Image (cartoon, rainbow, N blue to C red; front, side, top):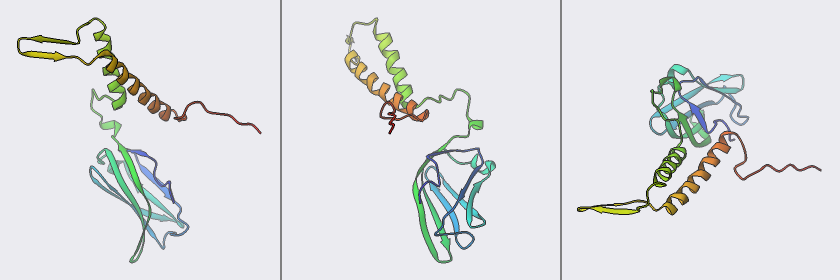
Length: 177
């Protein structure tokens, strides 16, 4: 059984998942989820017919520390404990508690912007290296900056395509029979 959790959830929002496990029906089996990472989070289920409702109120999730967590979903019946799903999940910060001046850009976008700023400033400089007294400064060659820029451009394109739900492998192909 896969698919109980998405890849990312947000702190500060009500978390609720209705889970149907035919092999471990409620109320005979209880379901719980454990998250381990920057902090410890446990979520228990309540039975809704033969399904399990994993739920955490917004007042509880606002306290969740953002980051990447390992998780384990377990079904329990007396002494029997079975893991029904495990994986990793990202808990995003609560937007309501985000400080002024927070930079929401990804690492790749920040790096690309910085590289492009350096290239722009370097356009007016023709020295790669200089020395004053006993201090020496070496600048990254423009050719290396261009390679880095291309690498980060590709990474930003992949991130943006994933955000828009597009294929990471290029154009979609339509097939008709």
